[in-house]
Length: 395
Image (tube, rainbow, N blue to C red; front, top):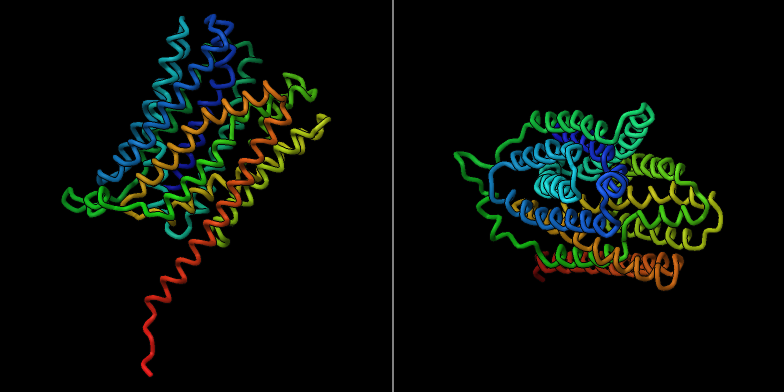
């Protein structure tokens, strides 16, 4: 039930977020008079704040007896603050609201992932797959709902206010989550040992490899820019985006199920290869129909990575340090988004879209090789360890 409630929470949260986010650039530039540079400042600052807080909240969730209060606070703050963008009359007002929204995301993300891992047991892949699928459903519904409201002659400010409804429903879902305290009488063995729990060398190396891949995983906004250059109209781009999210819904659920019966590192490596193939394909594409096909395939990458990476992290992290492990993971993925965007943007401006997209594919291919080598090293170490602990027969 915890996994279902948190999945519904993610569904409603993304509906509210995606009702606002696609309209925010236009609102900032055309209504508040901000420039493109300020838009970059807003998103860069917001993502940085969220990434740092994911690291801090992950550690904190290991030091307390219950993770739910952090999750509830994070969703509540974001859901309450987000619609206040409707009151903005200056660009810095929008920045302030966006920062508070991302504070909520930073506080909730790592404790929520750790809470799912705590209750999922040996079905972590399916649990994270379901959660990611619900998240993607919200990403489909939100923009479409905003489009319908705008078509019904509502102003952007009115749409922003309506976004408070799914936010309220999301927070209500968290309130109904039941978490068994990891302590009796106010102390928790898990919390007590968290500062001493070593994340271990395998987990540390895995996070380094994830970081390497993330340096080539820039914003999907570049893919939309490529689609536009290949002839898709501005009105078609939201439909293309919804197509991608529908693909993510399907493959996230199937990918999570596969993670419970197949090698998780190999599934992640397969996802990264799909990513590389899609990026190379978009770099070589010459017709709009190429874009539609590649965007549908791109959902496979998300299905084989987002839920599976978290399930693999559950395998690697000590139970007493799961919050810290998810915090480190979320921090690395989030903080790498800024240099990834700068690298891709620089290559795009200097040598064109094909070179930039091929370079991102190169990062993915190299990371894939390192991940497979890491998996082989980990398996070999496990065999050596098992042999060392096998008692020898006396002759």
